[in-house]
Amino acid sequence: MDVLERDAGDSAVLEELVDAEPSAKQRDRYREALFAIQAEQTEEIVRMLRRSRGFVQRWDYAYREGGIQMLLPGKSKGRPVLLPCEKQAEFLARIDAGPTQADGVCAFTCHDARRILEEELGPSTPTMARGVSCTGWGTRRCVHSHATRTNTPRPSRGSSRAPPFVQSMKGACPDKTVQVWFQDEARFGQQGTTTRKRARKGSRPWAIKHAKYKWLYLYDAVCPETGNSAAMISPWVNMDATNMHLKWISDSVGPEDHSVLVLDRAGWHVSKELAVPPNITLRYLPPYSPELNPRGEQVGLHAEPLPVQPGSGRPRPLGRRGHRRL
Image 1: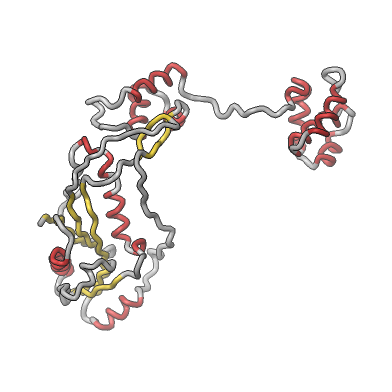
Image 2: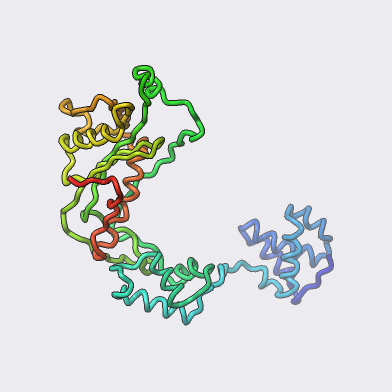
């Protein structure tokens, strides 16, 4: 490889840089240029540096084009911004002004920001996600809240082997079809925490939150195999409401079938005064294992977004057929 010194004295300067550089990767850049000036072959430089051929050629071309300055470490410029500067200022002004009556919300979310980019600014689809972040805006949490997620492996849907407690129940009720139901309760209402909203990075945004203490409870049970469910809405959660829910589950199961109802160990579930119908057998979960109840996870996911938009009317995701109100 025949490379001439771009400036007089580059060989001496490169030797000094090699001796003073603590970074091995940066030191190999200087060594590559020095070996190239000394007329070493490409294969020999690759062997001495233990680097790839592309590495040697890339920094050889860099020295030829700009000299030692092209070998110096520099801050990465990062990915180019796709949203034009004039549209960035327009977007920031639109977000800083806050929601309007036409937006129909009291606080902007990520979906609102993307809608503004699409409808009002009109960038292409690949620009949307990066267009929000490049303007100095990000997702900030107003009030701390946490949700549980589980990494517990789920059983294969293709497996036809029933759990041991279901097999034992089939032996006890040979003339009936045994169904497995999952039951849980969830609270819906205005007492909760604000979640995330769009704000400038490094800021601490505020959000509107209702101070009311009014809620209701959803009792829900479902059989994944048949798709049957029994749900009711109650202003309280106690043993009386649980007894009524068990009666409705019994009516949904029918006298010709038998249900194994999987539920947690809440106080109103384990009470001695609980009236369990004859076609239902209760199966309690182990302590401190709510992730084993798939119904509880589904109800929690529906309950999480409710307090986000308190000014846009009371959310009512419970209006499906089959839900009853006490």
